[in-house]
Amino acid sequence: MEKSLQRSVLLVTLSLFFFSIPVSLSVPFVLFHGIAGECSNDEVSNLTKFLNNYSSSPGSCVEIGNGLVDSLYMPLTQQASIACEKIKQMPELSEGYNIVGLSQGNFVARGLIEFCDNAPLVFNYVSLGGPHAGLSDLSKFNCSVCELLDIYLSDVYNDFVQDHAAPSGCFKIPTDIKNYLEHSKYLPKLNNERPGEKNSTYKDRFTSLHNLVLIMFEKDNVLTPKESCWFGYYPDGAYTPILPPQKTKLYTEDWIGLKTLDDAGKVKFVSVPGGHMEITKEELIKYVVPYLQNESTSSSEI
Ligand SMILES: *[C@@H]1O[C@H](CO)[C@@H](O)[C@H](O)[C@H]1NC(C)=O
Ligand SMILES: *[C@@H]1O[C@H](CO)[C@@H](O)[C@H](O)[C@H]1NC(C)=O
Ligand SMILES: *[C@@H]1O[C@H](CO)[C@@H](O)[C@H](O)[C@H]1NC(C)=O
Ligand SMILES: *[C@@H]1O[C@H](CO)[C@@H](O)[C@H](O)[C@H]1NC(C)=O
Ligand SMILES: *[C@@H]1O[C@H](CO)[C@@H](O)[C@H](O)[C@H]1NC(C)=O
Image (cartoon, rainbow, N blue to C red; front, side):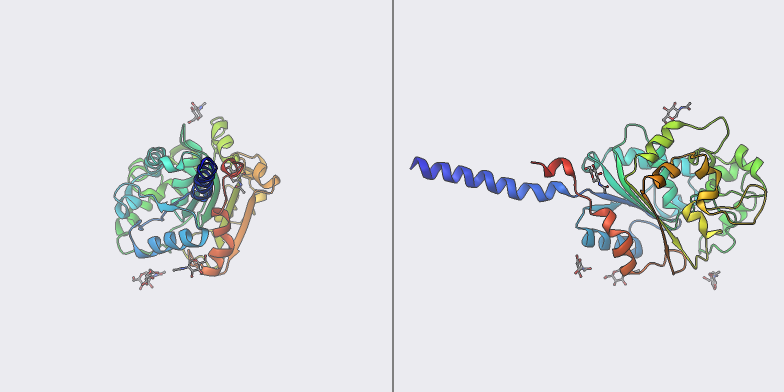
């Protein structure tokens, strides 16, 4: 009698053990959509579900404000700060998480990583089509609700435009660097680019990533230059040549820790053949899914 009681206690303990562990192991991910997108649209929700399924990790698209309209007109500083507050209210992320950024959503993602105080740690960050070093031109950008945006962006460093057109925050006109550094309200801060105003906290936070995956689209028809997705860009003052990431000052002077991460083998520079954001399932499985499959080492030692 006593023996069988012991046995059943043991079995109960064992089954708790086996059933509780796998659930707590997966690191969750969050996804940030691009301009003129929203979490509820088919493309974004299909992608989120696809990544959920193939990585076996819980993940969700985090919406900023009202979605589509705010993605066009809410300044990126505010978008990143909303993301910061939302993330801190998601208890499932408190032990750390991974991020997938789509196009402009990468500016929200990177703002979250660099600027958000008392936030949970980000392990892996996968950037799809994020023009991290800047955008020089959006004339090929095409969306049905963007007429107003076009007018705004013709005077991109104007104070009103900076406050009312989201992508104005990531414009960097190579022949107008003075105005960019003085009047752009987002990218110079995000890239720790202003001389005398570099904040080492932003660099420390970015450098603490375990993996940074930078995906560029070879036939990108929206971003100029497409190399910006790898942090490559034009030199100050000219439209030629396009500098590879390792030849930019952001890298050589290590403004945000890209060089440190690269030296440690933590940056994956990936190029896929499609146009802007045209990625195949096979490419997602190869370049994105593996970085969402990390399992927490702290629970696995139990
Ligand atoms: C999303 O998935 C549904 C169901 O699998 C499919 O019918 C639909 O065409 C997909 N939409 C896009 C934009 O991929
Ligand atoms: C879910 O993922 C598995 C591989 O992990 C795959 O075989 C299956 O087809 C996927 N299901 C859907 C609906 O995509
Ligand atoms: C922009 O959209 C219009 C209509 O939606 C289309 O006819 C045109 O080809 C598009 N241009 C580019 C560069 O994609
Ligand atoms: C740098 O950023 C951190 C985090 O946001 C902030 O607490 C600190 O005051 C900033 N330092 C300077 C010199 O601005
Ligand atoms: C996976 O997550 C753990 C923390 O739970 C971390 O220590 C480890 O470095 C991560 N591995 C990768 C490849 O990100």
